Image (cartoon, rainbow over all chains, first blue to last red; front, side, top):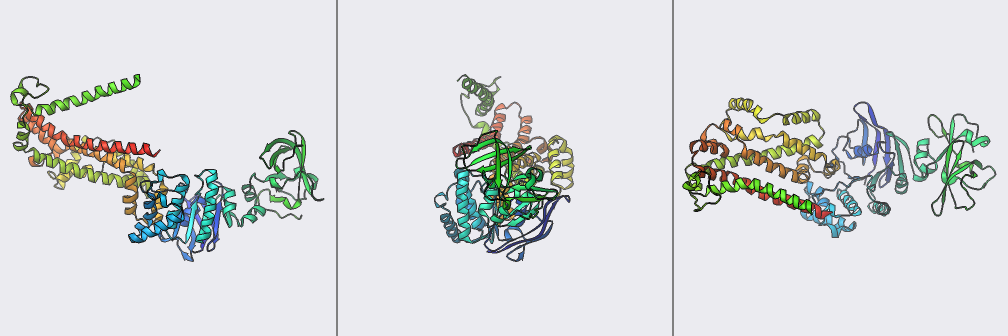
Length: 344
Length: 270
């Protein structure tokens, strides 16, 4: 078990394109960090750089306090689970699990016991003789995890390991991953493009955009206290509503060059406090999601989404006023996107 | 149904057209002289004899040329498949300086006809005194641009993550190549090996020029000179041809079973 530290890491391709821009990050012993961002934000490059599969242009990477910049991947005591599992297609589950130990010339009897122990732990013992093409998605996933576990890593890297699974299996594997993390107590870095997965898995979340770290914090803080407009818009589903100060009307604070945001699940049908703010608009669409309704209203051309309890009185094309507390209003600088603290 | 009939019908005709000359030649090889030389030989020997076969092996030392051909073809196949495997893999999956340029050069080399290489090759091998050596036939064939290009294309289809995984697993370059890369491109390597063997075995022009000493000649070249000496003994010629095509037949039968198995394995998996 070891900590992972990135200090001023840059990765420039071809002398022009900066893929990673001054990444500073610390993952503590046994911590599960999730890295999230839209595709092309550099999260896979970040992971591959930690693994040693990509060279960084400048900066330092430390694993367990040891600088690993110049070490080969196999010398870094890390393991990686790839998006498409990357199992060896011509080897059985047993051979896939044993390959790393064999490559490092571990004694045959030791390989046998360790592979069997890992297989039992992951529920693969009945499948050891099968080939990857004969496995289900979840079984392949577990094999890939087992192969990584057998590397005895100090840091465990996971590159969108669940994205190739269907939805029910994904949440099951997510729970298994969390249990595994708890029992192994290993430092893990989990990369995903799915913000809900990042929030549910990570003890801390790193939001990455255009090769820059936007925010590193606990899931609660990332959601409740986004540092800038990008984090606010990227995290949470449906995404945050953004309103100009004009739309907010008279109740708006007199701030120049500011854009406001409020989350769909914070919009209410009734006023709760005396100083609650409101917006109104024509109901464009009502979508029943069972226990909750999703409503879109249009106000001066701006579209707002609200998540409200089912209400039979709501009619399409009618005017609706939606209320929200002052504490639920976020303000961002219009040009820089930085969060602006509002006196509430 | 009609499509099936048409398909099997046309395939049968094709099979007969292909097999008939082969079988006829084989049949003539077992005929006595009067039968062969009576204008058009019959389809089937009335009095089968091993006379021609024994004759061509003993009198004309065909076994010696057979051995020459076998040494050259086996060495060429092993070396060329190994080189093509390494080069194709490197050009497709290993990042290094000048990879694009080398890929283009190899691709361009495919376009050069082998006949155009005869003269420069001869000069080069005379310079290093390798004319009349097996190396004269084996070395030029060792790096076959067609094989390299085919392997390269095949290797591009294999996800790079598998190779990354091998690196993470602590496998060195050679371990990765032999335990991960080679098994994945095995079907392609096998097909190329068969092809290389056939081309090497049947090669005529370059072996004729590079092997000027009679004892170093390969089977097709030797057969051609026997032909010039004994052009009336059709039975002898047929026996020579039969001995020449025998290994080809064996290889095709053997490799066909291999192809069939791989096809069946693929369909069973899904």
